[in-house]
Image (cartoon, rainbow, N blue to C red; front, side, top):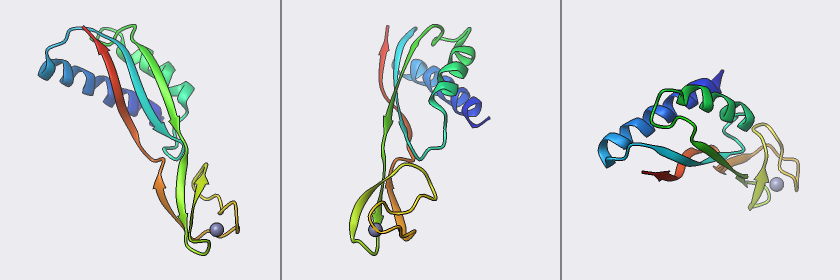
Length: 113
Ligand SMILES: [Zn+2]
């Protein structure tokens, strides 16, 4: 259900941006989603279409860019790929990992008129 709240927030943000930047229609949205953000991209697309109905973002195309999670491994002293929370370091199986990137959900670009 995380995705519904996310899309609600996304549409709300678009409406706010429309107010402050003076556009009327959103045609395309590029959304960056980290692999550690714990959201299903398909569910985001589905819910976005529903939430956008009757708003400035109705029928807007949603492009999702998935960003790989990365973490700093203490024992290795290396930056490693992390696909989901709770996974161990791919090099040494340690769980002493500090997440660096991949938890973000943000709008990267908009196509508007
Ligand atoms: Zn390691």
